[in-house]
Image 1 (cartoon, rainbow, N blue to C red):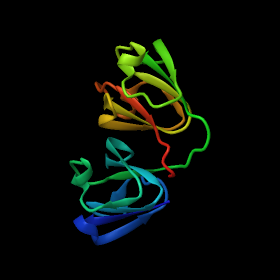
Image 2: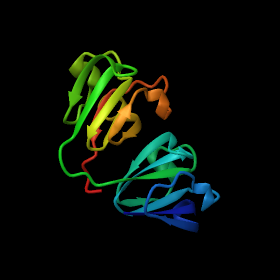
Image 3: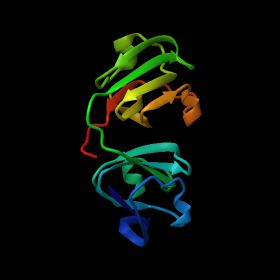
Image 4: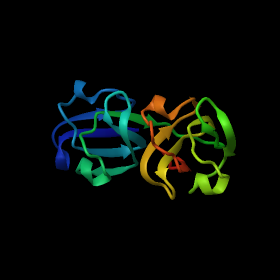
Length: 173
């Protein structure tokens, strides 16, 4: 798994090759405005420490950070490991695993309609890696969830954001 970051658009300027998580790109580059994913899948973030807006990148060339919706330079990245096996995530209407809940094992294009939940404020990812989206049909801002407990979406920088759809990361990352 390799992603190469470039200071300038169109793969120009200094570069930094990354093969794992990087919590702060400023240690390597003054800014990051384009990247090339040689293989694997990565989440890139517009703030250090895996915070801020997140974007899912698979193999390919990204000549300008604005081409995939980012409003600022890439500041951190996280490698998404390959997952083989089942996918399971339990979602809860309220924080701290409270309120009505449902288990997902497949993609869900509209959590509110399918499960009659008014919101999704916490979850437990049991198996697999997932992307959750702000709007139905996998649209809007996204958040990457790896196996673990998420007692509050605010804890990962998403206060006030309603999570409305979920998709398994099944690419050959």
